[in-house]
Image (cartoon, rainbow, N blue to C red):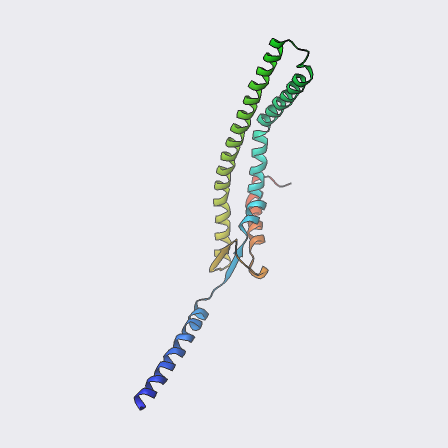
Length: 181
């Protein structure tokens, strides 16, 4: 009987040690933890804002030409609907072919513009993402963080949110380029 009760107390001690071990280990390894809202960084980083504006400026002339063609197309369609009944058959067919041709050209141009814009925007995001990531890592290292958790997370206390500090670092990094408002 004694061996059995001694075995039970040994098992109890072992269970107690196993329960307390993770808590003790966690206490020894817990470090400084931060959280960063990546969507907010990407949306508000001055590098990304400037990149979006540059892309808009770069693609604006082509977009304007497409809008002019779309307006011309709308005018041709309106003319066709209005005058179709009084036009000669040959004139009506010629106008319809012109409308169809312009419609295809506008659709093709719009699709090409969208694809090119999306590709350039993705390339810019990738380039700037590396800069944002470097800023997060640099901030974490200089401030002594052991772990930075990116969004999305279920919950992060505002106390550990370093997003504003990283944004400020990105703004300071952008300032020497002379783009201050």
